[in-house]
Image 1 (tube, rainbow, N blue to C red):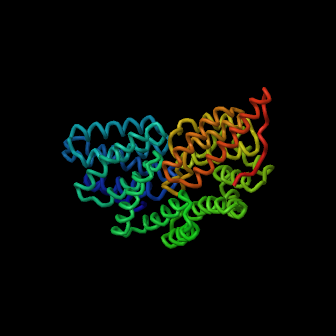
Image 2 (cartoon, helix red, strand yellow):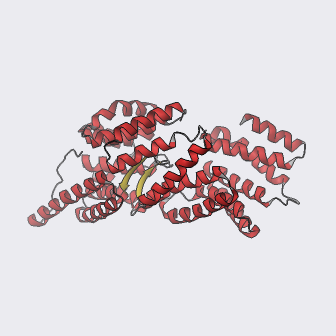
Amino acid sequence: MTTFVAAGDAAGAAARPDDQAFAALRYEDALFASRLPRSRWGDDGQRLLNGALAATANGADDVDTRVRLLAALGRARTYAGEVDTGVTALSEAVSLARRSGSAWALAAAVLAQRATQTDPAHLHERLAGLDVVIDAAVREGDREIELEGSRLQLIDLLESGDVTGADRARRRAGELILELQQPLHLWYPAMWAAMRALLAGDADAAALVEDFREEGTRWHYGDVLRVHAVQALELHTLRGAPEHALPLLRQLKQEEPLRWAPVLAAALARAGGLDEARTELAVHAPTDFRELPDDLSRMFCLALYAECADTVQDPAAGAVLRRLIEPCDGHAVVLGAGALCLGAASHYQGLAARAAGDHAGAVELFAAAASMNESMHAGPASERSRRELARTQQITERTAGRGGDDVLETGVRR
């Protein structure tokens, strides 16, 4: 990245706009792939992109390059927190690409536009955009962009509940990863295999979770320990021993308190450590969970907090969490780039509703969750939803029989 800065500045001084654009785009691609903090590295990237755009403003006939520069700038601004100007640049990139008639330019713009479409309401737009991206990549023979489109398609289809489609995308992405042999991607297949085995409750899940840890370490994936921690928690929960996940989660919580409090809270709740679980819930509950990281882990964290709020019987937290999870109703909860899938979000909305005292609403949500989880062939998630549905129905029946409110018994659920 330091070299790209030097190259971009030299190209600008020598009035070589093609090289200037090349350096600016490669810098942004490297920053995006490395996930280095924008607060430290983002200014140079935006400066290079703005300079390259200025150099191509007059007389430029390379529409694809200008679209890519606008798209990269829009993505850079969005991830830097400058959402309004990011949306403007991305919209301009898409409009210019459509006017040009270049499928490849449109694919580049649509791919970058995902930075502004991360919320559940844009799922169908994201999926439609990926069809454009993959089609253009196949026609142009760009295997790297085809891989990126397939990787993202896997995640979005999984969120939509289409496990069959997600599996097709996973196989295509896996084949491309093996073909391209880029270390940046070589740990993905093992992570996805472990995720799918955990979702289905397969007998080989333990071996696949360990295989991912080894592959992630081999290829120097920076978040291998973090992903392993959440996969291990799911594995130990399926085995009825969530307490085995606690040592690593406590270590990660010390390193990143705000990010790991929800995961530790859920693990403690499952293991019966209710007092400690309440303490971890209190890390974010007083601010209505606004301080949770606003990234691809947010819905996962909200779901785990809903589980904790239900177990420790915190009605106030449950009410807030139900509202925050509601936009994901009808979707599955997917962590990051497919590290883990918890199944139907409505299950966790149901837990939050029950924590808040709305047992009738929880019954409806658990029923919807059980149906979706069954359609996803997510055995463990389906069993959880059926169990909580039956439990909540019993509470509702007892309440109706007594003609008044009932109190949910505290219990540890495996």
